[in-house]
Figure 1 (cartoon, rainbow, N blue to C red):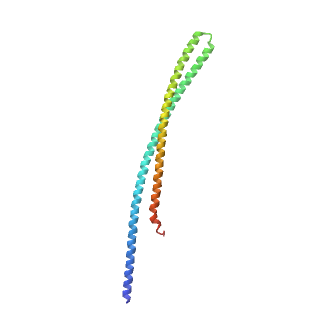
Figure 2 (spheres, one colour):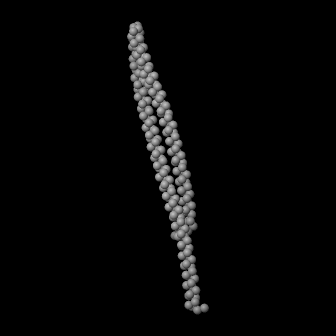
Figure 3 (cartoon, rainbow, N blue to C red):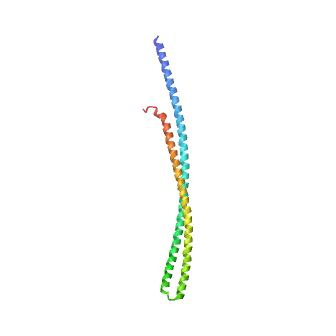
Length: 182
């Protein structure tokens, strides 16, 4: 075998090795592009899920705030009725004090009893108003409870999605782990 033949065989062997390395690199590059495409799709889906979840969460918070505002309004109304009832009780106390001082004078007693009856009507009306406000308050609390439950469910779904995303990212990083880090 001549020196030229050996060099030619060596060059052919080197050419085959380079082509094999090139083919291997192309396959790895193709796999890398496929992984990148999948990763991009997962990131887009995750972003969409986060946007939808954020919108749902903010709408739930908005409705909760609206319901809380209604509850505060009912409580303020109830406070007003309590003040009215307190005023009626004060007037009733005054009327009872007047009865005590005028016990010997029946016309004055009759007048004060009529005043007490009038104030009792006011107290009864205030009590009825408070009862109606309490019914509205209970309904608002049910809505708040329902909204809080929906927020809890949304947060549980977000947690599941994040766990799936973590699993997907771990799965995608598997092909990278088989190559040695330079």
